[in-house]
Length: 58
Image (cartoon, rainbow, N blue to C red; front, side, top):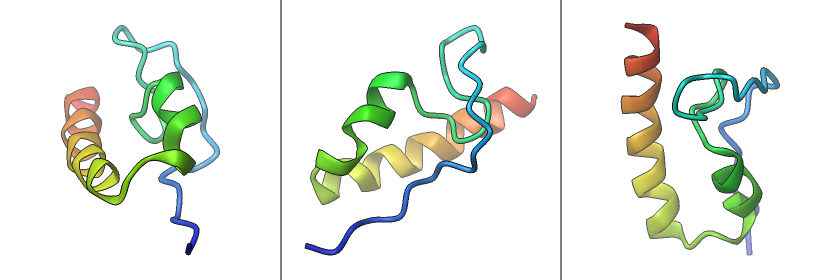
């Protein structure tokens, strides 16, 4: 299986109020599960990450 590209930008800081990484928007659990996630779960998470990152910028 082809390895999927991680949304990580090497700015790992989980100190946000909701525990989301300030770099990619994932939680620690989502980061650790990334490589074992099913494709549909990854797609859903990527949509969620866009929302999270925009919330953190506001």
